[in-house]
Length: 383
Image (tube, rainbow, N blue to C red; front, top):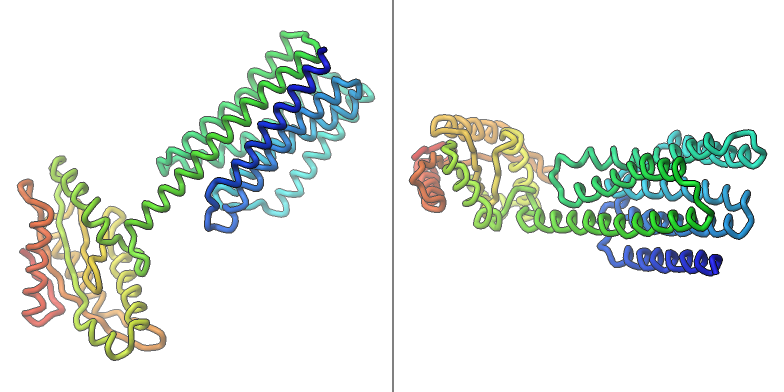
């Protein structure tokens, strides 16, 4: 009866692992080549977890030595597959030296199992070594996720919490169980089954949350980003920019708006074609972005017209920024498909006041831009 119970647990865990493997195929695949392989390692992790349970069943069946070595190696393999899932999740790879160290680690664990078999090591020393060996790759995975927590990603936070729980369980719950509970093999098998079942379910949930949250962030970025220049686009202007403006004004922060337009850009398209014009636009954006601060936001309004949101800049500072941009643009030669171009741009500047309405202020800056063009172009007019 007990043997049937053990086999049933092993089969059930196999079914759960199989469901998890099938589930990973349903998750969206990242465009990044290295990140796309994270799902493959997640599937290997699930398979290794099931192998851990199978090896425990082999030990219970009377093949202690073979089952123990398999249990140790499968546990270590599951831990490293978990680590590789995280490593690939963030687009990284192991070096040849790191791979060699991993192989040495597996050799050391296999040697430990052999020494236990011939009683050259005590069971307590062997168990301690194996626990630390399995915990080490999990700790590396926790460290890897922690690096990305600054991005305030919900998916990364969930993944970090789950991996931390796994790590502290390995170093906390399992040693206490081994020290204070002199349980039978059936109970050992049951504990292994319970821990693996929880780890599989929670890890797959957190992995899915991390992948899906990254997808949502990527789609959100694509919705608000101009694909040609990399600047923010009109969707951002109408959806996000007014909120940024309102937030700044509520907190009594200074906010200025700088609008600019490339002079005679239509003539470039007419003379050299739209391919050259597109390259010129990208170079133009790069010139502007290099002059902006991290908190400034460049928005492509359409065609050759752009807008810059400059927090913590008053009227004079924003005018100085626009003048600096004007000078740098007019002095920088652009190489567009072998054609040398010197662009100029006209600017309109306005400082928003606490009573300002965002779109009305942008309209006033636009009128200043129109006046700059009417006055001869390649100049800055401040409202």
